[in-house]
Image (cartoon, rainbow, N blue to C red; front, side, top):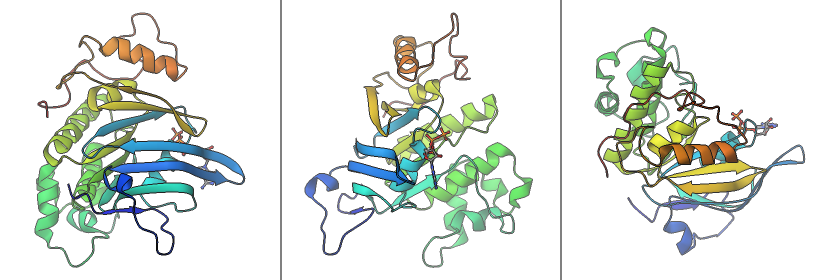
Amino acid sequence: MATDIHRKVSPGPGETVPDEGRAAAVRARGLVREFGGRRVIDGLELTLAPGEFVALLGRSGCGKSTLLRVLAGLDREIGGEVWVPRRKAVAFQAPRLMPWKKVWRNVLLGLPGRPERAVAERALAEVGLGHRSDAWPRTLSGGEAQRASLARALVREPDLLLLDEPFGALDALTRITAQRLVAEVWRQRGCAVLLVTHDVDEALLLADRALVMDEGRIAYETPIALPRPRTPADPGFAELRTRLLDRLGVAESAGDGGAASGSEPVAVGGAAR
Ligand SMILES: Nc1ncnc2c1ncn2[C@@H]1O[C@H](COP(=O)(O)OP(=O)(O)OP(=O)(O)O)[C@@H](O)[C@H]1O
């Protein structure tokens, strides 16, 4: 990964990026975001290492999507400082495909220059959607549309991939396939990933580290030092799940075995990196 491509989300005139910003895939210091005088993000500190996969958990409304939007550069009304790579991409829970453009044109949407169709085809093949390149978005299944959305993120060759509950609307089986796909893309590409999810098991299956956001800050974090590929049956998995659910203020029901988060006991994560 290039390390000299970071910039502030809200650069001031004549400002330069400090060395500490260059060494990370995300660096936020004292980040603040207010809506109508209410601080949704309140002095947040966050660092992601290049190539690190981090899951961001937290109660509904705690500010996860707001943070992601700031890191994506979609919201610049902030206080404090943020450095992110120039090459970053975001995929949301709703795939947000333009219905009047074929899938491959959607993938290239917003890319600078006049990228060739082959660029879209390569990304679509990477997500297993090469055969739907010429399709209209309305003919895609939910899982296919989500993969098209991921392809649209990947053509940006991101050093930082921001995922806002990308699997939230998928059925359990499609979700597992999509999780495996993201794990594989991350392994192959080596980009940093910040994944917003409500699903504790998903965080534990995929990430190097889990963060819990509360009161506008990162209130808790834990490394997930489990070998890949992972399953919920792995030693240490249940203990981490209990700890995270506890931090989220969710009681785990007896004999739950992961049902609280809807994941199935299958391996996710591909080979170890
Ligand atoms: N544009 C906005 N104007 C006013 N308030 C906003 C705006 N965007 C977000 N908020 C508020 O900020 C808070 C955090 O919202 P955000 O969407 O970041 O939460 P979240 O943690 O992603 O929630 P969820 O898990 O339910 O998706 C909420 O109270 C929300 O109402």
